[in-house]
Length: 329
Image (cartoon, rainbow, N blue to C red; front, top):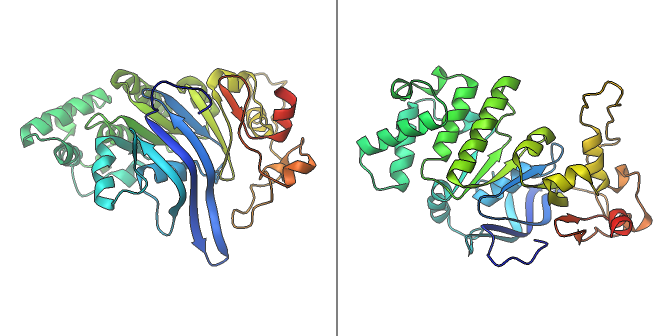
């Protein structure tokens, strides 16, 4: 995005806009965001609830719930535009080349079928293989994601698995045909802390083992620090900062990013836990200019007039902020 690269990125999102028509007007949930992800890279996407993180992932994989729609922009995957594909073309791409792991595994699993049937059907949809071969592959996948006694449990139903084990099954579904990109949407939110750590470790291990790229949508900055190569920070439908993980944590530039990091609980009891004053704006009638300016301690007059363009600060850091651009360039 900010650097000259010899190779085309695996995924390129350009000026993406996602809209939801409502009785009160058009809600712009994602507004003119651009980013890329390279092969094998892990990109974290963080921000408060309602920032547009999950909708960005859903738009990429073609799973926006009506009446939501991609109103503008392009999504280019492996050199081909995919935002204008037909339903059937997108269905073939989904699972074979791009897969998604949702935060609630029950969203992805059919309670009426065994996990084995769901795995083998997914495998046979995308790969020419007989029933026996698909079953052996399904058992192999369950073993890879850490399901004990996979040969026996493959014939069980989703309700017979714990929440953490169901999420592992969902990860196995996503890995069925070795996709190039996985979009993980808050994959550990519904789990207890211990299980969160186990599932996250499993996802990271498999991502590295298979060499897949991953977009990790999360509100947990600790998860980002442990697993991601780069981070994109979203606020009220806008992308306000993109940086390498180390750069973002050592030198956050956008006032919103700085406020997010200040709101994270520190180990020292002497550190004060700070909240972000104010509320996320109404996206049907958002504030003019930078959407963060009503809550920003560094807001200037220009911040109310026009949304700032992404500005390059060094080779691996970009920020959309008038104050940061004037202070750090």
